[in-house]
Image 1 (spheres, rainbow, N blue to C red):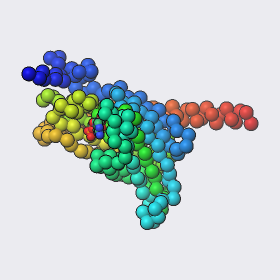
Image 2: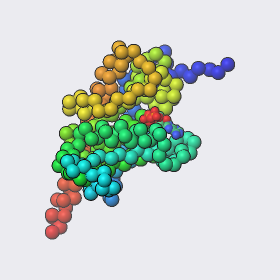
Image 3: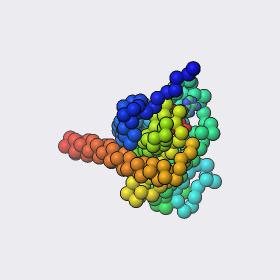
Image 4: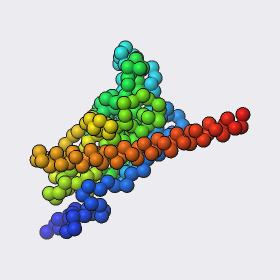
Length: 249
Ligand code: ADP
């Protein structure tokens, strides 16, 4: 007989010791790539993500240009060594879907009217994956957009919630995602709590969804603080560098 994997113990704790509404540890560093206009590196539990932003720049192919505003394009990609089995390189249905929904989430915060006919290109590379990579990617790319100096209404923060062995939990890891009953990625504009991405894999009752949304929104606000801290550290370094160059002159 196959022994059933116990994802929640008798004390209500998860396999990695987290409480149901506890996030995995998150670290963000902004401005890590020299050649990109903006960038961010993020570690979220065992997920490792690099995000780079280029633009606003002249949009190619030209038929995609919008004379009224910039278009925001996003490419989400999982590198071959990001998962246990080698991932076949190149786009697939899943990465095309994630690129689309992430791009739409960013379009809702970027002030594109200021840059007609241009494109803002967002690249999300998943270097190591352990579930929740679309949320990790969106969170990192949003910091990269701010690092690129793109005018925005606010950052976008993202986090998933779901249900595992009958319990509502926040920020599912790979085992929980594989064996759980539901996984619901959520992205919001933290200042207004507007939802810019909401997907669901599995099923929940209306009450569970409402409970999950509340915990998910609170979590996004915690993540927002980490994003802002990363940007503050980045600007402190820039100011320091400017002061040193001025002093040398
Ligand atoms: P998310 O990463 O946003 O949770 P999914 O729920 O689609 O997106 O995927 C969950 C996890 O499954 C991923 O984070 C990754 O660890 C794993 N995974 C996804 N696609 C593949 C793949 N092609 N090969 C192996 N593992 C994969």
